[in-house]
Length: 407
Image (cartoon, rainbow, N blue to C red; front, side):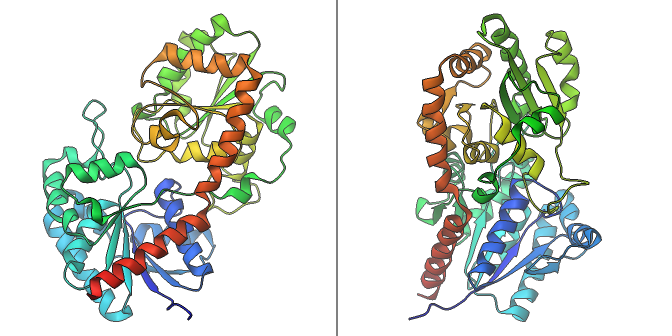
């Protein structure tokens, strides 16, 4: 018997053309649902919808615009704003008769969704990172604001279900008294076919000024204290003293150019390439794809991937590197340790351990057999994160939640 096709509301507090794990993840979920004959409808901030329209590109699924300034209003008036947002969701439910709501970002979307849908509308909330995680040392997390912490603790435990993209995130749910029976462990995904195409790696290295004979370490992410790029540069300085062959370190991501002074101070100007954000502007490719085709090519041109982050909700760059068949070095920080299975799928070192990073980098540089071992591990591990598999896991969750709500 053919299963009923679903009409799915996908509200979010941030969306394309902003490019990040949250935005690209939701886009791929919506696209995957549509490909299977369902009707996903993304409900996004007015600013994002306008910016999408300005690109001249059309998305295959329907977009609904939130009232202007809805999201910015929630930062100053979390209680009142989430009530108003819940009322807006109620109107949309009356109009579209959604089978289920899938909210992205715990605050304000998740809170508003739980307020509106608590009694009779099936729903699941997908937290993204700073909406649920807290790191006092880094000043990271929305819940550092006691007003937001209070409202999250009050409403998210009342939701029908939440998805946890890592075990670390599931532990954050447990911390705010969300029972484990409500939690679905569904990771983020990666577009594997984009990484399986051939690339001219010699030309790509030349474009970025990287010698083709050097061993190339790659790290990817926006510059933020939590990313640990300063630790990585210090590790590169230690590696330079013991490396048995020439190496280069490329760091790609928004604002990474600001690390230039530290690179110069460590005497690493010839060894470290700060590439900034790598986009497909003036090139073929969709503005709604991430990573860009250029960045995919850079992944494919590298010899190893190093991700020194202190805390992640997931660490999407790690699975992108796995999709490119790169051996992985990362930390035991939340999110990172989950993706590499506590060291099963890559080399894991303690957060902020410069010497440990340098030693792991040297191991991959010096030992071809070890490198080949982790290349094969990455290639196999990446298959787990194919988007079709992720979308099917969400569909299973949707149908279970709908069935439970009907009891």
